[in-house]
Length: 97
Image (cartoon, one colour):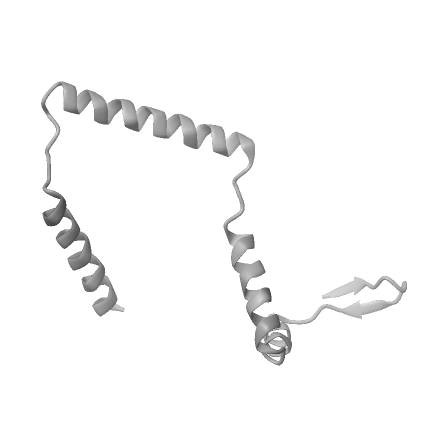
């Protein structure tokens, strides 16, 4: 890939492997800062239109759950049992990797 540099010259964009190599040569503190910034860029908020549709979907889900409690169709699970099931599922996923 070719791109225009600030000085007006044409240059080549670094490959991901070259960027990784350069990043790994940074001091530990700078690598940590860079890693934090890169990870943070993955967690950016969705656009406002996506955010409102997510909020609307959660509103419908909350209404559905409240209705199932009120009409007696909700199935209750003991906290300790639920946590044990979650831990078991996570452990099974880890073993399958």
